[in-house]
Amino acid sequence: MARLFGTNGVRGVINDDMTSELGLRLGKAIGAFFGGSVAIASDTRVSADMMKSAVSAGLMAVGCRVLDLGVLPTPAAQYFVKTHSHVSGGVMITASHNPPEFNGIKCIAPDGTELHRSDEEQIENMYEGEIPCKPWSEVGTKEDVLGAAESYVDAVISLVDSERIRAANLTAVLDCANGAAHYTAPLLLSKLNVRAITLNANPQGEFPGHLSEPTEENLSGLIEVTKYAKADIGIAHDGDADRTVFVTDEGKFVSGDKSLTLMAEMAVSEKGGGTVVTPVSSSSVVEEVVVRAGGAVIHTAVGSPVVARKMIETGAIFGGEENGGLIFPEMQYCRDGAMTVAKMLEYVAKNGSLQKRIDALPVYFTDKRKLSCPAAERADLMRHLMEINATRNMDSTDGLKILYSDGWVLLRPSGTEQIFRIYSEARDAETAEKRGTYYENLVRDYLKTCGI
Ligand code: MG
Image (tube, rainbow, N blue to C red; front, side, top):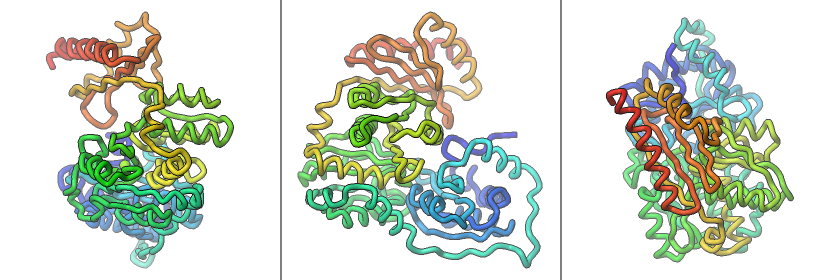
């Protein structure tokens, strides 16, 4: 059968492939899988109520008690499920950073983590089959639950040196992409005595401020205001606020692997060692700094559930992705936007200028490219690339990572889109670019021979 769940749940364009019928049927399948009480929350998209209602109706049809948490960041919903033992699972209605016409359905396991692939397969099988509904007297009910946002923010504050942050009298510019953090993020800053200048903190659903993928390009407003306001830091979340990226006190965008590196270094220094988990796509700067601080790095395939599971398996002290999705095990084994903010504020309160700390990091240059590549060609293309690079030093944890003495190139088809990614990293920009071009040409030549 067709795979329904992608890397980040089920996603699609509303009333195209993401319909109320799909929501209803998937709600029934999810309800039959979890049973009992199921929490549900959404981000701020226009279609949030439609999809949440459809999924809720499905959950109730199979007898589940639905706990509606309202609009919440994904990690806040995950934290609610994790900390309420009578809740058997959760559903988050979000398409994260995707454009406003998208929405999605993501399941939360009873321990708050992202659902295992084998469990998703069970739900997919139920979705394809006959789902028995309950008789009229046993259908579920739905109730609103208040306070999940506040409990989440308080839990985050309890895990950082809040006194140190409060005493630092910091100023932050905050960009919520008009998404799920529009309430929790300003609340977190105000409770930490951080003066906040907010941008795009209106839950308008259409994300009119800018596209909700937190890239340098989309965050030009945040960068400008952080510079102009002479703030200590600029903070941006993606649409569902599981990810966070930063702007320095000099108004420079901080790439995700640099914030990942600083947070990893802080965790390793605090604990006097330990393991950090990150995908093969992360910059070597992470490993270099972590090893220097006395820790070790384990590389995994790309995708936060893989990182989280490896962290649980190895007892890692910290983990995360280069896209700003960081995992703090003391809070939960999920990417957590608010934890990332609070920990970075603690870092700035203790270390001063973020720009100075970024400038002190080892320098690597990355060349990132993406080509369109039909899903049907992926496997053959990868086999071809594996063959022609057979004599090189390779790592095939995810895609193909070709290791050089002064860098690496990662060749990897996207799991969710019809694209092929080429990441090249080296000690100097010219080498990174030269290798990027070389592999782009290899891929293009192959696709040409396939008539694409
Ligand atoms: Mg997200």
